Length: 74
Ligand SMILES: [Zn+2]
Image (cartoon, rainbow, N blue to C red; front, side, top):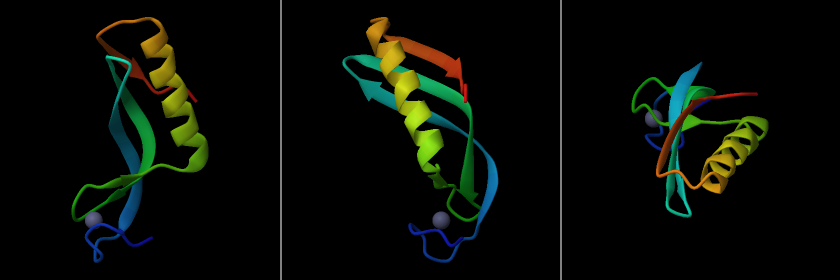
């Protein structure tokens, strides 16, 4: 697909790191499958993946840690 940020980049499948912040917790989720723009590096997650990423972020927040770095778990 075409990137909606830079308008001219093409996206390709790859992996990215997603950082979420909620309730004072920064969750860094690594190795998240995504479509990544070859031009600007913007990433796009599908709905299933973004839901899982949010769940992992919430799980980190519920442990009340300041920073948590976890691999993506589908
Ligand atoms: Zn782009």
